[in-house]
Length: 178
Image (cartoon, rainbow, N blue to C red):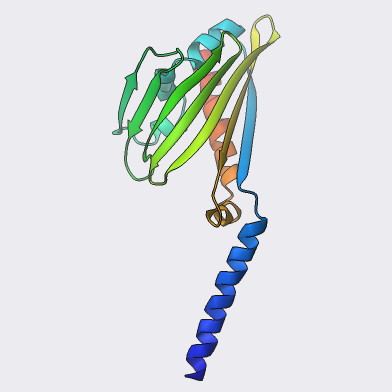
């Protein structure tokens, strides 16, 4: 009986430690990455505004070549929705263009359905670095509810997400500079 009390006390202590730690871990995060592309702003903007073009540069879209994707609305315009349903890693969700500032910014809402429900905001901006060079900045913002936010410490969510964004931007650069 004494050993059972010790084991339960240790388990209770670990659970309490995790919950207390999670109370001090931030719930919201934003990750930003940028790249220079040797093309004029309008060329780059016209390409990234089209949700279907993600199939050519997004590691997330390319991770499951058998996933089903659909596009509703007019691609590249406010209200267009790119939906996906793939394997356990790709999951299921949809991405909607919420607002566009022509030649400058695309605001998107990403709604994850599986493997975890979630909501994120993504913004892609384009600005001239020179006459034939464009700075593309991509930001991704989301939140993790308490106590799930402890996972951001364990799995380095911001580092992994940032790495994927860097690959996406590098792929985008390669596609556009061909």
